[in-house]
Image (cartoon, rainbow, N blue to C red):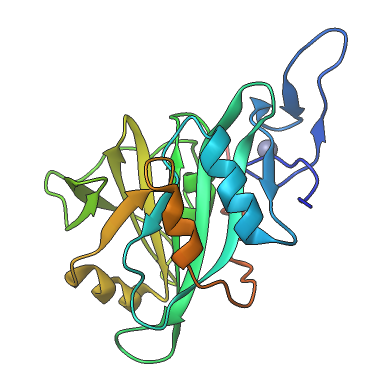
Length: 219
Ligand SMILES: [Zn+2]
């Protein structure tokens, strides 16, 4: 079971393909890949996603101690396959209290990572000269750049597998987790990893609303 098709950029309702267009359409964002979230059986959804995604399906391997999977989502349709994958995880923050981490792989222009990071456009804009963090993704050292996000979270983006890799953390100081050596594997290459993942209470981070649109200034 999955949620109804929604816009990956604003979670708004979509108009389905019809006689005149074979694309799903958001009134505000035009043609988009429909966003879905697994509402039950996230483990099954994750396995299915690894079979159909055209982008990596990142899972931490190993998971940080006492962390679990709290949500699975993707953008794409049955015809073209998922052009974005998202895994929500949760667990204890290194500085105490609960924390959330989202991992997103997406083709440029999808706009899912930007919504979760709280950015206005579909893709990250200018990145700082120097990356601030590093993870290992499918065996490759992968640099991550910080992006300016609302203060409740820390958002990083890099490139892995030819598409964006977004890593988002709540609260912001949970970014200390990245000081540990975080290793990500692509579930498409390592499908057996799904069997070792712990699934826990669903989190609502994948439903993080888009950033408020900037107010139009006086003209
Ligand atoms: Zn939209």
